[in-house]
Amino acid sequence: MSKNIINVAVAGATGYVGLDLVYLLSKHPNIKISSLCAQKNIGRKINSFDKRIKAKLPNITNLKSVNWDNIDLLFLSLPNGEAQKLIKKLYDKYSNLKFIDLSADFRLEKKSEYEKTYNLTHRAKNLIDKSVYSISELKKEKLNNIRIISNPGCYPTSVQIPLIPLLKKKLIYTKNITIDSKSGYSGAGKNYRSKFNHKNFYSSTYAYGVINHRHVAEIDQEFKKISKNIEFTFNPHLIPAFRGILSSIYVYKKDKTTINKIVNALKKFYKKDTFIRIQKVNSQIGTGNVIGTNNCDISVCKTRCKNKIVIFCAIDNLIKGASGQAIQNMNLIYKLRQTLGLQ
Image (tube, rainbow, N blue to C red; front, side, top):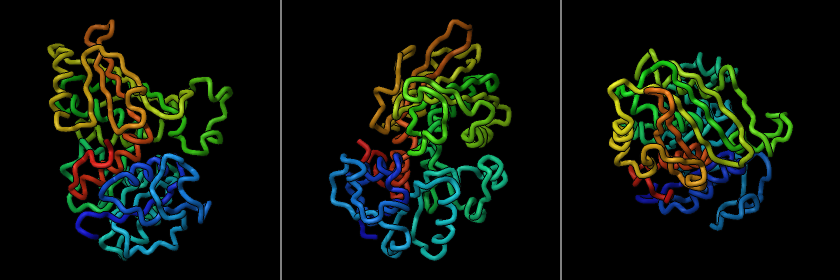
């Protein structure tokens, strides 16, 4: 790798997340996109899938044709179960190659938990301990010399960013936490219609994953690092919008903790983090202000019940929930400014 330029390859370049990733990378001053890979549409230009991409980039190719000696970093935007196989194949052979995985393959630290949650055999179990699950603002001190970065899920990003500082500071009770999240349908990928069969798809709201959504496992894992006594319920909904997540999180604050103290604690915790924007108490927020950005908007609001508050968190599921955070993690591991290529 030259002093300033990072040569990257993107596997899964033509999916919703992959296209946002390529678009953002194409504008990053320290990036050279050397390979764009997909299973289909070999030889086609990437801007035939996304007109926003103006840079002259390599045509789509398959993974077998990549010269890995010339790649510094591989982004993997692949179905669950596929990234682990590719990383296992390349990890020892190319010792300078780094990986940022946007699937769930390295999010869970226990092989058994991964296999239980995703009903897949983990075929790179020896690499799990060599990876770091990274919400950028929460793990930036732990990424030195790490070659495998596991990008978090979009829902867990919108949940952990507002809750982890408050749980660490013991400003809220650990019981009776209710998380109600709503997402645009792009979160289900390009085959979203085959995954959901409810009627009036584009004009209705749909609750799913009621008993145990897959993302609960990674939220649970990270919460247990703070306390084994945290209890929460989580329910996702699809809304008739393409992108964006709004999570409504209902918690009970401690008796002597004011709502202003909670807001100030969040502001202090994220004071150096440009993308986290803490709003005034009782502010009304939604996804509109974060769509197309790597920003995360948080608002803490009173409710009619004593000591019960609701925390709203809005992100773009394809950017802060996926591609933008992947680039933010890349900036961290290469010791670049976190905001580079994302503003």
